[in-house]
Structures are given as structure tokens and as C-alpha cells.
Length: 505
Image (cartoon, rainbow, N blue to C red):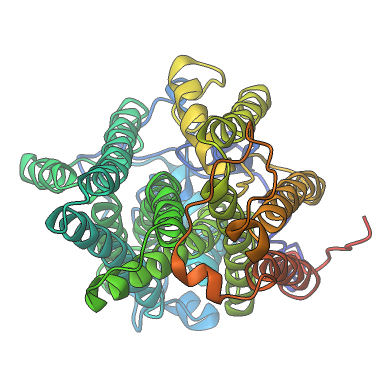
């Protein structure tokens, strides 16, 4: 966000700093939940006390972002032309909201401090093309939920009550968990005084749409509102920054909620539908076949997009991090899409032939290992202190995400962690695919060859499997895994925002 003393280079990956002025202590600048962050230090003025300002007692919260401060009048017209502020015109200085000190006025009139606010908008400000990301998030969410809801109805109509009920459970339970976390985060934000005042009507609408299980869309709507508000010509520079910060926070919260929902709903739903396709006869109604295919595709697309949106929103909400580029977003999406396809297909192949006990043992072992690592690492999503009861409950939920893919939850180099995780996942995928290949060749499925009955149940596969060459599905598992790794290497070598990643390290 800030430039160095020469004002010529962009230190987006370094800790932000501004030359201090006597009379104003340093303030902490972090996201509301310190997702990956060690704190980022930056010096800003003491907040004004006004009914339009958001007051926070510093010992109650480590959050004190730029936009928490209400500007009493930034003389911004010449400066806006110099740096290309996002609005066409900047209003003349506004009258003070309250009585302010001479030191406050000195801070507001300091060109260095105005530079900090203006450059924040230049780097993190709302652009119209961001509406595309919001639209894609809404589209993938609604299409995923809609296709799954139709399958619940379709299975019920044809008498498959078990599959209908299981699909419904995988639709409702994750939505309730997601809504619970969203409401808990609202409560946490209120306790930390980092949420702007809201009217009773606004809370009623939020609770109503949360009751409809649309928590990510509520936060996306807030993000769009704050983004558009930051572009209004009648707001001061500091208030524009405040609106932008709120937009980034709401977008990041929405991305996190969507990611949790995807890995608790879309991933198990995709696994279930693949299992049904592999083991059940092909439906007689063509529309149901299309619905199954659409459900699988939208679930897979939602998973990859939710991770991409989360990564983009997370970097945008961290002022010392460079934003994800279009090329970076595409490579990141390809990385996650390839590895998720390999992982879920391998799990589906193993589930189709293995006894349920051993599939459950493998899944639970991976989940428990992931939860243990998260607890030891210490996350701070639901409370400022790690390893509290709410945080442990969140780690239990996040462990389900790690059964399918990895999310880096702490600051620091992620390459070693990715190498460790993907080595383990690649080994698991390979073993499960080999088991499938060994015991589902045409001769063994149709014949009476011996099988380890303690591990492999009597295959009951769909008729179309016999028409597919034996090498196709294993090749799809391995090929998509290699494709995902290739996209990951390309991302780190050519499109990582740091632009200085060395793969050999």
C-alpha cells in the first residue's frame, strides 16, 4: 500500500510504515479476524468522536485501520489529480465534524499522510470490474444449490428415498453451519467495535436472509454497497478509505463463508453424486442424467472458484500484500481445479469398491490429522486468542476442508507446507486409484477371482463402467493431479504477487 521514501517503488510485500510525527502513537492495522496476519504497523491520527465516526478503545481491540478515522477535511483536489484518485472530482474541504486539536490538523494537512490514504485507494480501491467477481460468486452459489435441490426432488420422485435424504442432509447441514459462523462473526465484530452502526431495519433484513441460508450473498451485497459508496464524489478521502476497508472485510468474510460451505456441501455432494454415477444404473430420464452432470460440474466449479475468491479477497484485505492479478487468478483457479478433480475422483473410485468401514477410517484419519495440525498451529478466526473453545470448533470444521484441499491459515512461506500436504495427498490418491485398478478390471469384475473381502466388497458398478477402457479413470486421476501441480508451479514462477519466488527454495 505504501511507497518508500523515494515514492518510486511499491513495497506491497513489506511491512507498511510512515514517518512518525510527534504526538500520534502507532496504531495497528489488521483485518477483523487476524487470518494470516502478524500485525501490520502504520501511524494514523486519533479518531474523532462523532456519531458518524466509529470509536474503538485501543485496549479492547488490536484493530485500528486507516478507515477507522474520519477525516475532518482533506484538501484533496490537486492531490487527486496527481495520483489519479478513483473519483472524477474531490469536494472542497469539509467543515470539522468535531473540535479537533492542532496536531490533528497538522496530520490531515501532511502530504505524506494524504499520500498514504490516496495510495490505499489506488491499490485496494473498488473498480467496476470487481462486479464480475461478485456476479460469478452469486452465480456459482445459486447454480450449485439449485442443481442439488433438484436432485433431492428427482431422487424422491423416483423412489430413491435414501439418496434423496442424504443429498438433502448434505444441503442443509453445511448451510446451517455457515450461517452460524456468519452470525457469530457479527457478534464478534460488535464486541470489538469494528462493525459500523446498523439500523434495526438493516439487522432485520440480515437476519431474514441468514434464515434463508444466504449468508455469503448478504456479505457480498454489503461489499458491493461499501464499494459503490467509496466512489461517491461527496465523501472525504479518509471516509472513502473507510468504505473501501469495509468492502474488503465483507468480501473476505463472504469468501471464507463460501469456502466453508463449499467444502462441507459441494465437495461431499460431488463425491456422493460420483459414487451414485459409478455404482447405480443409469437413470431412464435424460433430464436426471443432465441434472447429475450439472450438479457435479457446478460443485467442482464452485470449489475451485471459492478457493480462488478466498485467496484474492484475503490478499486484498491485507494492506501490505500485493493484489492477485488476472493471470494469477486464472493460474490459481487451474491449480485448485486440477488438484480437486484428482482428489475427489480418487475418493469416489475408492468408495465405489471399498467397504464403508475402511473408507471411513481413511477419511477420519486424514481429518483428525488436519484438525490436530490446525490446533497446534493456532488459528484466530473466531476469537483473538488461539485454542479457545470457539476456535477449536472452527478448526474441527476447517479440518473437513483439509480432507479435500489445503488452505494456508497463517503468515509465512507456504511452499514447504504445500509440498508436505500434496505429497501426502498424492500418495493417498495413488493408493486409492491402484486399489480401483486392481479390483475393477473387466476380468475381475465379471469373474470369480479372489478379492480381500476384509477390504473390497462385491463390486456393484454401473453398466456403463464396463464400456469404459480400464485406463481412462486412473489416467484422469493422475492427469488432473499433474495438471494442478503444473498450474501451481506456473503461478509461483510467473504470477505470484511477490514476483520473486524461487521454486528451488
